[in-house]
Amino acid sequence: MALFLIIFNVVAPVFLIAGSGYLWVKRGVEYPTEFVTRLATNIAIPCLVFDSLVNTNIDPDALATMFWASLATYGGAMVAVYIFVKLARLDMPSYFAPFVSGNTGNMGLPLCLFAFGQAGFGYAIILFSVTSVFAFSIGIYVITGGTSLRKLAREPLVLSTLLGLVFLVQGWQLPEFLANTINLVGGIGIPIMLITLGVAVARLKPANIVNAIWLSAAKIAICTGIAILVGAFFDLPDVAYSVLILQMSAPVAVTSYLLAERFKVDADAVAGLVVVSTVMTIGVAPLVLSFVLV
Image (cartoon, rainbow, N blue to C red; front, side, top):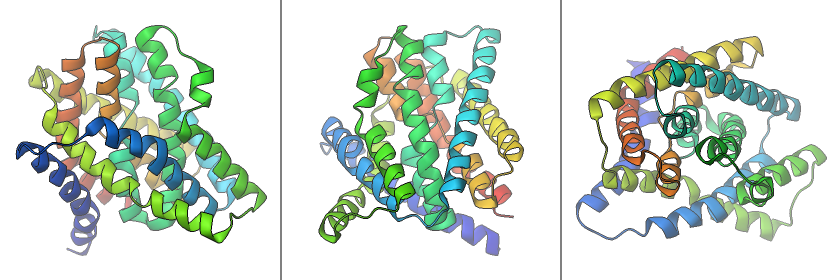
């Protein structure tokens, strides 16, 4: 009973906030998704990432280990997904990025924060940053056959991560007024990401739901399995190991649908993966939490 209450207290806020976004759209109220998404990805989340890294109590060496474990996990996931997509005879540009790039932001960050506190959130920020770099580099490369490293280097999330790590390693601190400003702006990041997730799910028009069900299950199983193996290999601390598993079990990111729509691949199929895998998380997240919290 105690474990159930812990899991409920972790999962319920995430789905309640996302559900508010879903209901907002279903009631016919306008929601400026593009503006809010730009606000989150260009301002709020970079501030949140920088503030979390600068103020974390986690040892820099432990964060470095988490970084290398995250890279290894994504490397293993890319190999496994590439083989799976080939064997299943799926379209590589349409399915590779959605399978590898989970929703470690909208879904993963709040789950890790509520489950493991600030320590877990610090580790989750590292994996989220790796996910974002993947989505805007290798993910776009697989879809289009090319990408720009210069453009990637200008992404606010990449810059805030690098700057936050420099401040962390050097032990630097910002003036109090500036630190408070960044903390205040970063505080809106998770709520608006969750609301936007609900809005996006409400607006998507998924195709071939039956196919999306088994593909979503395969995506979650592959990425979670890789995380379990890599985390054990790196002998991560308990909290870091749990965060790695929980983050990699996240559903398909809404970003994958936006990229599919932008670059004219099978956006309807990707929408199906986003919706179905997100709904699956209602059952998957408590199951994973019951595994990592024991």
